[in-house]
Amino acid sequence: MTIAMRFAAALDEESARGPTAAELLPVRLARAAVSTLEVDGVGLSVVDVAGGRIPLGASSPEAACAERLQFTVGTGPCIEAQQTRQPVFAALADLHRRWPPYAELLVVQTPFRAAVALPLREDLAGAGALDLYFTDETSVPELDVFSAVAVGEMVTAALTEAAVWSDWPVESGPAWLHGPEAVRRAAVLRAAGRAGLALGTDAATALVLLRGAAYAAGCSVEDLAEDLEAGRLDLDDVVPDRRP
Image 1 (tube, rainbow, N blue to C red):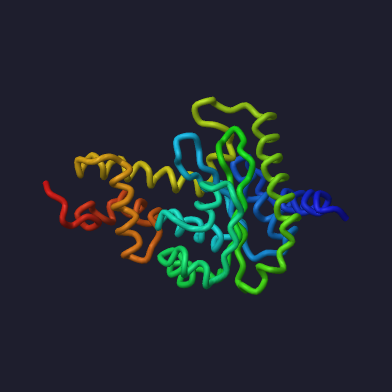
Image 2: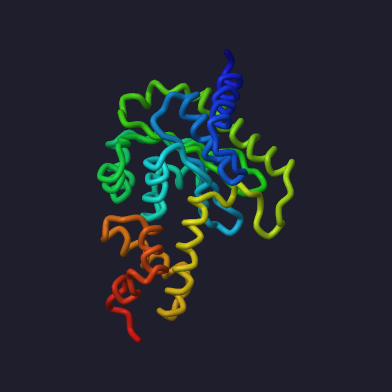
């Protein structure tokens, strides 16, 4: 059975298992990738034309957490793959050496001990990446890179086909850009905008402050933003030395 046939069969199985909502297509694709490549976790993300990082979907809560932690610290293998358009292979020692804050959080909050990030060809949403996660770092050399690249191409093709054969508002993009993880990320950007206004700075600077506060608290910036939106945290709790 070819890699294309294996991936198609895995995707059919995930679609039959449900749910089948259009915005959850990236989740089904990520789960099909896990089954096809026999890795422990998969995440899909894209950097849009404005430079914003959008998580599209993940194969499991742990894989989604790994992406959120990378966004929280603002650096990591997937971000590097998207910026350089080159594949990144990182065992645990590489993670600690190249991205220490990310490695620290990843080890504490997920079972993953290695990652491979593959850039996807750019499509209508921007520069995508396929993150592969491993609980055993010795599994990285055993990865069939050709198959992983092929799966990345099929993921991109599936997303593009879904966009072509559906109707969607030009200003918001296809439904698969608005899955649960993307909605959580949008809440972060809203929180950064409000924090920027309160602090008299721009949203990008405010996001850096929110990231620092989240890292210090040992949580993701999404968790911090949700607490701010719900009123469980005040901006003074996050940036205690801000001036009125």
